[in-house]
Length: 351
Image (tube, rainbow, N blue to C red; front, side, top):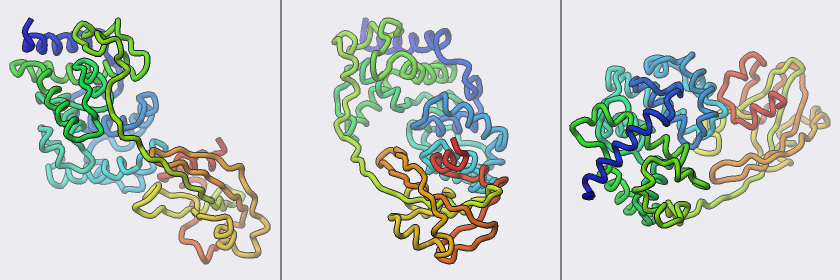
């Protein structure tokens, strides 16, 4: 069998497998609505499917189309996103919706090249939208698909290098379904590649014997699929100790300030943030300082940083003023709908 016919067989096998064994009942599937596909693709970046499902449904209930999202306030968007993390995604989501409405007449562009011009849409996300919704013959390269492709091809280039990732893009394009039936095959093929990486071709203990393209997989024939993909550059982690002032009234109102940009939790509403216990204490009027109560500290892990959070609780009367703090009192009916960092929301809810 020639290399060309092998490539065609690869695409055919992926399409056939996806029809029967792929994921076909997720809430963003079985649609060619680019708004829903785009929303799911952004939410699924760095986030597990099981987490995204609830957020996806709630988001659509409040903002069912791109026009509604564009018209919403950023605070409302951040509130719906609260707890998903990586909040730049939500800010870019809002900016992108406004660009689609104001620059594209409320209609998503159909090609990956045009989609990449929108805020927050990178090459792989653009390809996913254009292939799933419009049948464009273009390859995606998210984390799951990188793992599948590097194992199939025995691709041992270091993906920490941009040049090697470009080589993988080129190789991925060669495996696509043939152009004559791309409009029909591409949505199924794209979904199949994502499904294969999410369900069988796992980082550890891949289910190779269930894989539809096992016979074409060089990593499997080498007996060491977990060697792939190769990426040598490690994320440099740091840590930071943060003191949070949890000022609240008996009826549940909370004093919140908005985090500056750029920085951790930029744009979110948060308990006032301090770098030391002393600075937190100094921000509280002397008459109230004896009311300060330490709350058990806890760790919150971000992508590049460990936050060691030390909350201090302060019960005060309604409307109490903090002369040295920027922020505002938010009622117990309002703050649950704001964009809050996940650990702050958990703290306030008492979970």
